[in-house]
Length: 78
Length: 382
Image: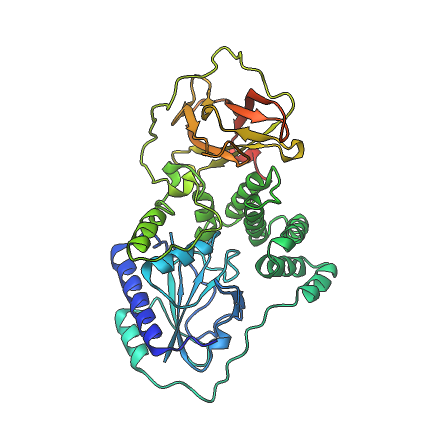
């Protein structure tokens, strides 16, 4: 399985960027986050080792994506 | 090359699939309904380097642009394969007795074992909560698993109510965990909602169809509470009908052909408290009971004490087109109490419906009564 098709990633990256900026600027519904909340990790930390199922049921972890840069967006559809 | 990956901590991650189809987002998404990542709120965006270290948290647009422009893929860093945990190994470890091992086992069974292993996951979570009653994460996860089971054919009568109780206990222990707070608010009253959780679903389906695509199916349709919008003042709505059996003359369902269930979800905060009451009626499968749909709709009446306000007293559940069916029929209503209300407050509710005994049995018009009990939080802790 590969997630590195340039067209897909370029589009995905744009969507993340657009979603993120929109949320940051206008406070859309899912924007619960503020800097008042603590996070279980900080800049410089290795991302926690955690294997989770994808929407398709396959195992995936951030460690399995090593070797390439990753934008990780933790979000909810609400 | 940049990987773009999502993680969603929703109770129903499959709804994200519809959201992504709508927004034409086609990057991989990991599902985390148990919130194993342990974030307190969303969204959070991370930029992660080739070694798997976090470069930036909630980056600025400039950070994004720099990240996108910097460097090439590293050929010296090897990805580590993502492997499903061995459920057998987790079960062996859980038998050893530590609460952490039990929770790890339950997590694995819940995420990777499917519906077939859900009962085991719940059992391990229960043991963990019993041995560590102040383990807020265990309470939350038990609630997630119970709510999941409430939506399956293995549904037990108290699953949803217990789920809410454990979520509330988790939030009571750690009131700063907004993922947990949102899980309760998803099913709770309008006065406590930060927003409508799934109002986008219908709009998404419409737009997807207009594009010539077929919307992905959801495992579980959002309920009324999940569509409901927040409000700043308690609003009463006109009843859809007048009281259908004011003198109590309709024969009661003495045989138990209909199984009623009531779950009360309170506000998560103390300011302006209200309650959302979820009421359901299902034909009793053990008696092979089923609805008769050749007559009129199921009518449901909420009859609160004089001082208690409900948003709507009369409800009508439309019958489906087929002559017989066995679906669960649901209504929801909201409650506001006067300051001096007794504790607990009992709110009688009844349904009038046509139900049949067995496949070729007699069909009867029956009244089913139940009571919604509104208690103060102190009396409800699990």
